[in-house]
Length: 187
Image 1 (cartoon, rainbow, N blue to C red):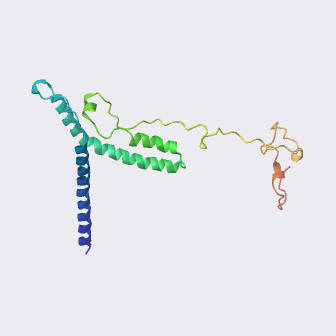
Image 2 (cartoon, rainbow, N blue to C red):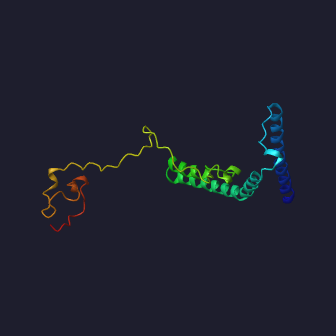
């Protein structure tokens, strides 16, 4: 019973995969009949063959056999890592965007002009992100120390060896409720 349901599912998936390109082909064929004729690529003089162009075209096909899967894996993992960075930084989109731009950006296909050196090949996208606008609520404020609590005159005299306020800045036992334990001080 299980084999029949799996084979039906596979047959349905295969049928779907076969119809999607046909639908795309029909749409593009219809668009070509209504469009103006495109100009041809200029051919070499005297019926010659542009062997350099053929070589770059064949080289780009051979390069793309390895380049495209590598780029897709890089983009997939970069998308996942960027999402993880967004979660781990509490929703910091600037951190996530830096990772996403680098991994999801760039060229997904190597063209013959790239192999000829006319255009650069960018495996990863730009790493710079635009700075946050100044009125953004996510603007980071510099950390400042909190103001010291006011000193009270009931805190007692300052220790002679310290020469200033005690470590608790004079708050002492005034900030705590009175204890029911006996006083065990040595003083």
